Length: 270
Image (cartoon, one colour):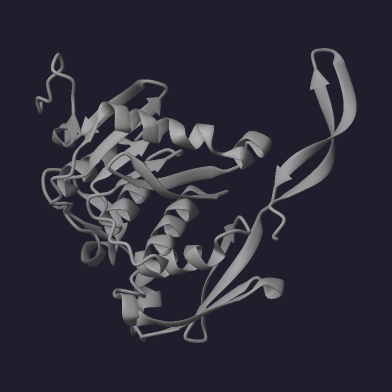
């Protein structure tokens, strides 16, 4: 069993009073990924679902394109190393961090994207729908089922759902790591994420939106705010973005056609 938290001494202050006590702190570790014996990246992450994290990273960055691209996966816990052997992808490491100026897929303005994003993102053609009750359920699920967050306040979390059911959840200290873990878990389950819903605790930046596009997911339900560039990309990529989903309230920002609204409301595109 991996320890996900540590107890550390603190001084707690309330008003003019203070006292010594202990606080439960979430752990953060460096995990280094080797692909075909080449060091690719060191990720700062939570010490759980590490294989899922590294598989998701390799898929998201284009090292892995197909299920049979990965041959073996080894996790060396004591050294904080994951070794993956798979189908060679020439020069992918050089492409991974290279930025270029490119136009987005349609109406949105010119933006700076990773060079390999253009070959990995997909315009969503899914006709999947959810109703408001399902959107609210997904939004509140993380709050109601995240003991580690309640204990530490130090993690992000997310999950995958379909037809109103939750299939699985992942969590990490980093927003990007959560999505990579979700993608890696889908790979291990041999699950195609098309027509599924991703629900997420964090802010939706353009990089988060691009990760979701690479996962082939048409609907995002987030508890926090999106950025304007994320929404411009979502419009171009046909991704439904719901934000500020808390309690029974939410904002539908893009592609409301995928949300079955009550009769007294209308899904008119502006």
